Length: 338
Ligand SMILES: NC(=O)c1ccc[n+]([C@@H]2O[C@H](COP(=O)([O-])OP(=O)(O)OC[C@H]3O[C@@H](n4cnc5c(N)ncnc54)[C@H](O)[C@@H]3O)[C@@H](O)[C@H]2O)c1
View (cartoon, rainbow, N blue to C red):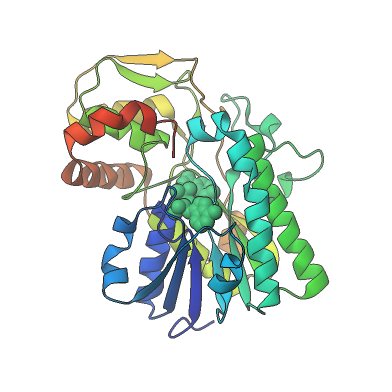
């Protein structure tokens, strides 16, 4: 696939990941359209591109009549990232909202078929993996793509919607000749990230000097935080090389406990405070780490950013761009809202 002058659409392109994908597409000289209702994405993430005319922004809700058709018209490759999505607190406490993604995805995929889009790339999630595999932090488990199967047991309605999106895309590939790729993103972090995700929440807490320093859950939860630059590279490779709707994990195989990430945030920022665990807040699966062998085999993809480096870069970004009073005033709500 050539990217130069390729006509691309990024749904949800004003988001954290979406805007980094837009940057990468522009760097490859693609023609980029974004459709976003700015419900959680922000124009600031795209402002320069929109003002310079390098990105065509359709500011509209994909669930409104005609918007999906307008957005995909004339497009060759659709990256579908728009979703009602937030961090752990959001997706556990706002399941009704997350369930609307099934309709949103269906509208976008149907429009892609009507307009003969050449390739659809779907932002899926580690949340499609069965909860039962992720309960024991003492076990060394790497989630492999084929572990998603009957009996399905996805992570809240957000995970079920992503699972349904994947399954529908694969059915369209098999039955209608659509070409598609599914990318299962795992706990993405980096600049432009949002405080409703755990790592940015920790950085924000240090930034405003929270004391005691609150960590949700037992702190024993294991994650494989994956830098947004690696996610974007994998997404583009999936667009280039997968046609049949196959899902690939885009996630590192680094296993990091939440408590260790929190301690490193405190150490690196120099914020001195006692850590207090809050077991009553949503903390997600206890053990979620990807196996990325399939992405390596199919795409030649390997994550390049070690967690410790990416964490330090993200802290540097946060501390150099945010305003303390603004962050402090809305922090409690931003941890669970989108
Ligand atoms: N951040 C992560 O760790 C992570 C992990 C797995 C999957 N994902 C997926 O990656 C994608 C991007 O996530 P993100 O974290 O960058 O931010 P996000 O969840 O804020 O991105 C969603 C974007 O879609 C837009 N949007 C939502 N509903 C819309 C609608 N009806 N019409 C038009 N636009 C709409 C939002 O304004 C936002 O820009 C999402 O699909 C998300 O589910 C993210």
